[in-house]
Amino acid sequence: MKKKQYNKELKDLEFELAKLQETVQRKGLKVAIIFEGRDASGKGGAIKTIMRRMNARVWRIVALPKPSDREQTQWYFERYVAHLPAGGEIVLFDRSWYNRAVVEPVMGFCTEEQHEVFMREVPLFERMLIDSGLTLIKFWIHVSAEEQEKRFQDRACDPRKRWKLSPIDLKARDRWIEFTRQRDKMFALTHTDEAPWLVVDGNDKEKARLNIIRAVLDRVPYEHNAEAFEPVVLPPRPRLEDSDYDEPALEELNLVRDYYPD
Image (cartoon, rainbow, N blue to C red):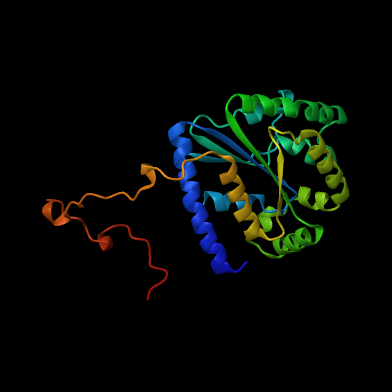
């Protein structure tokens, strides 16, 4: 897809996201969107694209670190429950409770028994969320081994992206088949009519982002045509010259140096 076409499509979708945002806020809807996938599949990029022009008071990003010692003693879902949306909110999970479905068993961060218990409980947990009125959308962003390696090499060579390349990423790179087997098991046991997995081809990042946004718009009921979306007519702006305030010149303030003079 050419850059010009991508920008046009994205702009159109952002108008629709704004309508969705307004509807969610006004009607008090609750929406949780899960982004899962291998390292470098494009989860963070997709989330940033969605958030680019959205209201951070309506949309929240949740990207939890490794559990604390205290959290490890809790019910597994407990720390995620604390971040679920209230009415009028949309939460984007950059990885989620599904860490226990794929990452943890492959990396040895949970026992086999813990993994099996999770796989039995997660459909019940998600059914409870949906029954409570929450709209749950689950994305798995697919990336090929060749494309992932290309992105890893890019991260390794670019200081701006080096922080994205963690030791766990490198371990996971060597365990591609194990990850694939656990992913397939996750799909088989947690893909339900109420909370299906939506698989996105992530090899083309820009197309993946557009497809993800369209999929969200297809699954969250929102009002396409309402008075709230009509242009706002602003009243005349008060004239500064009509006030008795004498504004100081910028040069009289603690002005940041102009690093880019003409």
